[in-house]
Length: 230
Length: 275
Image 1 (cartoon, rainbow over the protein chains, first blue to last red):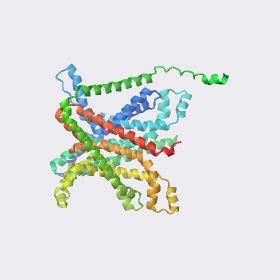
Image 2 (cartoon, each protein chain N blue to C red):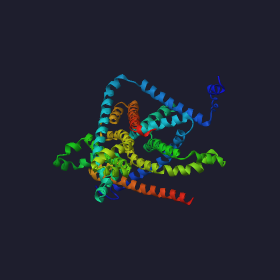
Image 3 (cartoon, helix red, strand yellow):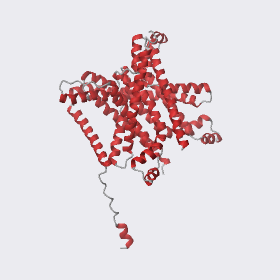
Image 4 (cartoon, each protein chain N blue to C red):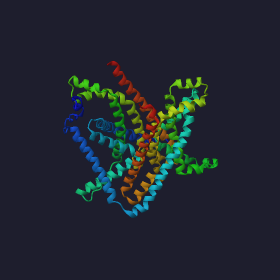
């Protein structure tokens, strides 16, 4: 019941650390995969488009919690079978953090690919042609001409996805990772002050999203400023 | 036959052959990978088909599906009703109303649904004596009612924003035109604004239904036996991974059906806009 540094606050602080680091670890993976999937979906090759669309359909259609369980339990069973080929007695434990990162990453990337795709569609083909006309390679055109514009267009959508990702991290408490919600659940169960602790947890999430929106606004402003200077 | 006729009869020149570019190879490899995965899934489900198991747990899945559909339907409807005053509050010029509505929307959109559900189910459970004295304990004792309560409040916040966005997307001239025809505000809203807003709101509303279907999986954590809850129950009894795979197949089918249904409705509603 003691509510101080020796009480529950430090446990919840650790939960905040886990939540934030999970979200931050997922972000680059999700962005990179999402970008690649978007590239596949806007390619002129039908088979690549099909492969990309199947990816999005599956991971946008499954509940996030189910994806998490599929990765966590499925990964455990699959890896165990794989290792037992070499060492029959082997047991495998999948880290809940890694499972959470993969599950949230595939969900994030399938949504991010849609954001990138619509940003790609907003860039006129003249930009590519112009890049080629001054002798840039495909890769250089992408990096120097298309990407700077793409990021500016995709930024609001990606910011929204970041906020969703931050909230989705709460699901990993179901597979035993000590995030904010799990730490407060333990505190609530031990102290019997459930409303206090869960109310506190929602406030922490609220503070995290307020901080995020400030960060997002700062990034948007800096991107806009760079455009102004050009 | 004239020369023009033969020119028209001539077949167009054949397209240049498509070479095996790196993209094409990568695409085919990826598609092959998906096909292999699909075959693997079907093979796994067929070989692990176990009639006693299916007879024992199959009805549970149907029941769970019913619970999921019921939960989503009830919460969406209650949320839609609740969203009207919230949306009106957001659009109100009175700072008290708009501030309250803003705080409501910000709270429910800024925190995880799971945390809100915990707050209602476990959090309000801490006020058992008070709730009992008010006579509301029967409501907050049941996980099912708590889930509906939390989900309705949550979706009301999202739906209020959609409603507001859709109503504000209708140009001001529509209001002015209706006013000059002598319609009062309620008539204008019902006969002029809402039909136009509905077309704009359809897609967000459809997405919200899909998000609720997916989000409803979390009620399994507070011991409601929806589709996900039944799945977890089955897995904890059998340790058979196919229980999760069947749930995945069912969820995917629901979501895809909904998505295509919404697209069909949208195509029909916007027929007059197509040329």
